Amino acid sequence: DVASAKAIEQAGSKALATSSYSMAEAWGYPDGEQLTFELMLWMISKIAERVAVPLTVDIEGGYAIDEDILAHNMEQLFQLDICGINFEDQIVNHPNNELWETSEQSRRIKTIQQVASELQKRVFINARTDIFFKAKEHSMDLVNQAIERTYAYADAGADGIFIPGLADP
Image (tube, rainbow, N blue to C red; front, side, top):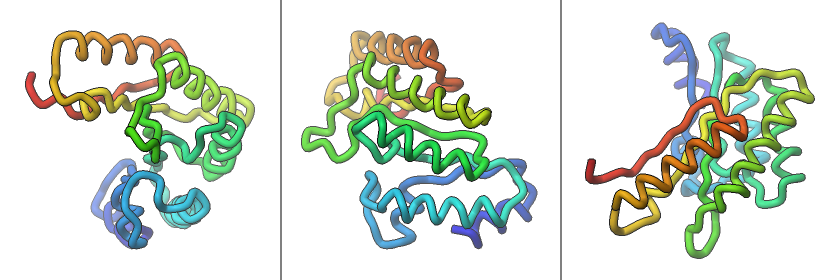
């Protein structure tokens, strides 16, 4: 929220990052795109208006299955002059908590890059893969799949990779 963002900035932070979980819970919603995109965008706009440090946004899966809607959502978000996003490959609200196929998620990353380019914005895309959250057993095969995803996402235009959930190094 704005108050905590301002407090973090005043404490000396050089940048701010939002958390989808925190933003949803602040409004009484569970995480996982249960908070509407419109409300999330409004909340981000209020934070962006009131802080001077760079702001990154956890956009989960972009609040869209359809690439045209994804592009529209990103256009609205990037007009707030945010500097980065965290973008995950889980198909949010899918009944089986599936992940996007690597090629599909790569195409979605390219869509985001294209929107940023058209708006002449430089946005850091932190591509997150939830592959370790989806498997009951972790194996070298899963590690290799995660590595394949990271290379594909980087080739598609991701600037950083986030791979949470590995329980056994």
